[in-house]
Image (cartoon, rainbow, N blue to C red; front, top):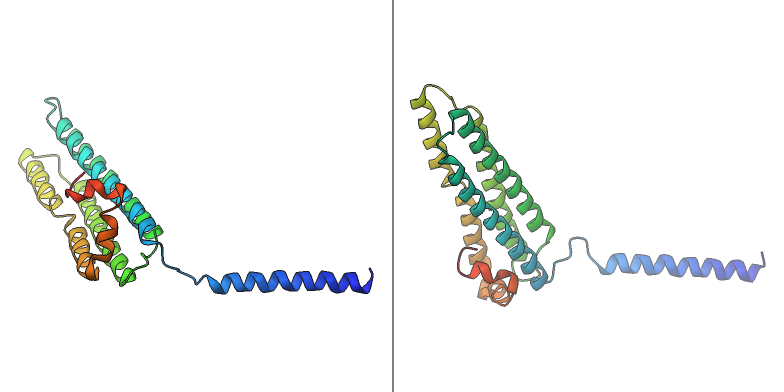
Length: 195
């Protein structure tokens, strides 16, 4: 190979390496996400999670009033509902986490507050699922007591999510993120508080 061709090849390799390093340094690890992109992902995931929960509850209530339902069938309905809820809430948390940190003031704190609420709500559902697995089928009074206890605890499983959302709202100084979310079609269903 001719010395000038070798020099040209080395120069090209050096330029490519320098450009690659420059690109890596220009985009910091964990770079923040555009607030509109973050909001679209967040709202889509939230609406999906809330809608799924609402549909799951409706189906559970419909199935629970089947006159042929046995205690064993009822237990399986509860376990299926809670298991689906755990999986859906985990998936929701993963989607929100994958959205990244919104590029706004306190974005990382807002993201952390929301994720903490989702994670704690997931843990609450998992604990209810574990308790449901231990539900006695007999005597009937013990079964009914277990069902009522799980039902009462279920009504509060999402309290940590609500707390996380409230904390995120307080961290949104000047409602920067709130104002952006209010303009996004994906967030329209959340404006009324429910899908």
